[in-house]
Image 1 (cartoon, rainbow over the protein chains, first blue to last red):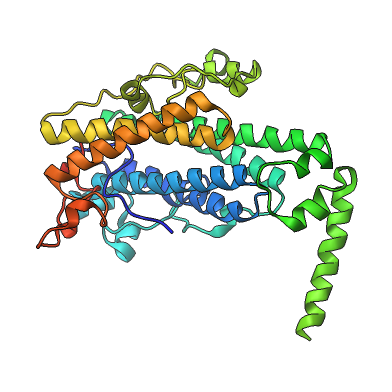
Image 2: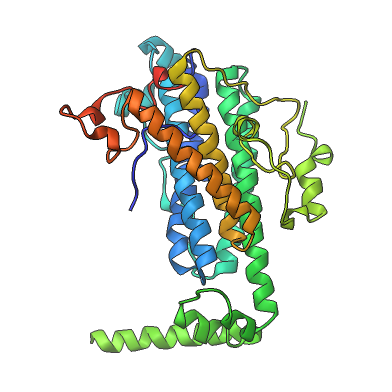
Length: 233
Length: 143
């Protein structure tokens, strides 16, 4: 479960309205490299992490991303709050206003609505964590682009801060990736001694034969699939 | 065009030197870490010549809120670190120090300015104070 704390992770206090910047910033809310995609990516992938270390890290970073969704939303809200209709039209946000007035709506900077195709869940920890590392790098790059587009210190401060979080998260995911990779290289025995592993299917079928796990895994997945179909017929 | 200089990026340099695996990285103090958005000195990387914003508290409420945010952030950074390095006992001890301090500061803040979570001890009043603003996205709620 999740509990709400009535507090931003880092303070946002934007005194000057800026519709143009609000239009760009929304991509870190509902764009492909945004915070909403990040939160959902990690909170979905965590279920099939092979041990407690992976489950803990994806839960905790996924939860922090929800706090970043709140920060970005707050920035967009404060940038738009005092705008007149004329200013909204001039910034090209009239199409947004037609459907949402000044309410928040997750899109990218071009107004394309958020979609779940922005993230993947393969069930393979190395593939999933590689995606997470790439996602953090892409979000860092987008924060840099956004910082380049403004000179308001009230906006730059939180963007620099959020950029730094991408760097820390990347490093933690890299630690996790290397930890799993090392375990795979060392073979099945060491995997069996991984602390508090409780994914039996993964332990028995994926890690037993690390050299040919892909063929085995695919075969077993197909077999399981057939068995399920038979069961339902 | 004043583009980002990848070759002067400490963070990339550290990545190449594989310092990410260090079990005892040097840490910023909570205040500096919160301003930078990073507790770990070896991971910190500045963008161009931008410096982190200086956070200022103008009154007692803001001062307490800022201090609470700083400690909460330091504890959270150690939480993420310990997720992947759960055997690091000195970091665990530090995490517990920060965690206790965070609880203490939260209690002090809530006693004066109302609950931050709905099940806080300070929700125990005749009036249901949880609904009272400011809400975090409102400007005057922040430092």
